[in-house]
Length: 311
View 1: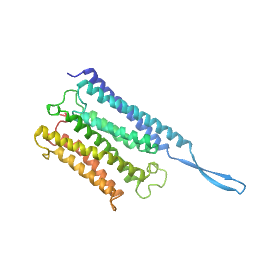
View 2: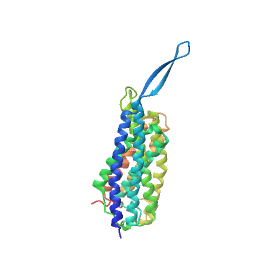
View 3: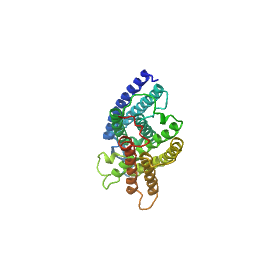
View 4: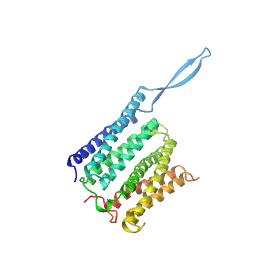
């Protein structure tokens, strides 16, 4: 039986989360518009007239920093209500809340947002990429709510297994972390272009290319073993459910393709001649494969993993 009141609460919290993320996105835009500006003040020191140049934050830079703090706070609040979406849906159905594509995609976006919040708290300079994380997150949630929404209910019989908690949970974690890694690589490609440091435009206000490259690499390093475990766990579950570890089902195939691409990225990132922009492009391809695997493979292709719950 499904608790309709908790299911309705979950749907309401989904709308609240989108609203909070949208306001946070506006605050991140304000931070990016005002942040990282400084003025130079020259002061004479000593009898010899020697001068010292000191960087003093301009008023708009201070205002931009306040916008950034407010944006992170709103993002945290949104992440809490976002967590509530899944918790209340799980309570309403008395199961883990990722038994269909609506729930899976909602959880992936939550992981991406939480991963960004952790980065922003550890390194305040990374707050400046918040608009590029929250923007896709808001668009993704709107698309999920409009195109993938499924009424709360029991999962199909094939998913009633303890492996759901292992395989699908790790797939969600890996996908969400890879999402942040891919966004960082896209920004790195923009930031590392010749002349990107010139002027005072939006690109010049992003973190340095080296910082973005580190974020992309470190998050990929974290996500890769998680995704590897998800693929292995899926093979073990397939053997238990269908009597074979691997059958080249479309979902299995593209999950393996994504694994190969991310393995190639991590190798390229440490290989002379591939470091920098070439490796970043490989990471972007990896993100594209993950999105293709989630959308086209689930919604268009047919296979043993067709549990999207979308008519």
